[in-house]
Length: 362
Image 1 (cartoon, rainbow, N blue to C red):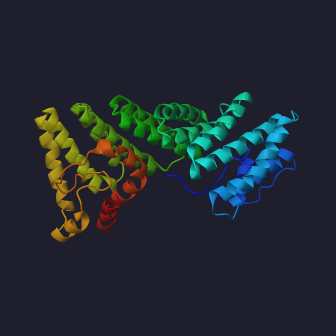
Image 2 (cartoon, rainbow, N blue to C red):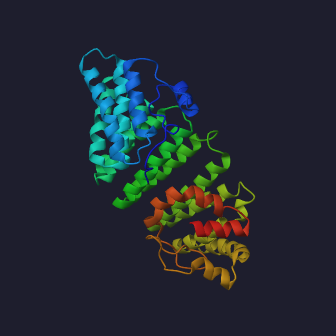
Image 3 (cartoon, rainbow, N blue to C red):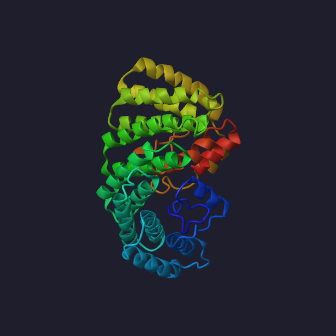
């Protein structure tokens, strides 16, 4: 989902280096005095500091500095830095179009910015990757999914080569979510599994950037996702292996290993072994599940409160909770990837009230 407008404090992409990023956060950024620097700042102010609420009014305000920028670049006197500032401005206007009035116009500006970055040999930079990412988003909005996937891959490879920080890690995660969505639409299990493996590699790289518990929780989700994909491929032993990894990850935390989610994974595991014809392991994990599930049985009023309503919510079947029909997880993987953080955070709790709040939220 797009935010209607970015705020100046959120918007890092007009910055040249980390020092200017910090100035933006502090609210003390000012042009250095060059003509192009003043123009790019005028563009940002028109788009993101304007008090106008109507997107078209903001775009009208940005017309004057953009025309002046084009005329200045056309004189032939512009330096490489001037061209870079122009590319930033094109990117900002393109992104604003994409967030507000339309993808086609956005792509015109983004494509021009992309060409400047390439001319300046800045194709291994975050701003070039940002441009590709925005182009992927707009291509997807136009239904041009093949091109969107290619731009996603190009952007991902750049972000993944940059020094790891919270921005690059989160942007890589967003791209992998988008790729998963595309591959679900194609019903391509092989490509979905590749995204999961890339996600796991990214999480390993995230150590020291994300908290340890976050890395562990995300891994649990990815292992469960891989298991569901394998189950839908009738590759039950591979699915069981993924559930085992999920349990091992949860066992690292004393609260998680006694959580409702751990209990449900035991259930998924024993059922998967049943499908695989491995009666020994199926019996072993079913006993563990039945023993643990006694801690999570609701009374009748609680069950009604949790599940009163239609069988589907926004295309997602009932969750496999309290013996109800399992959800079709391949249909919900994409939405689950976007909701994983809040879901895991709440459902991982051992507190009964927190757990039920987590179930409701999901």
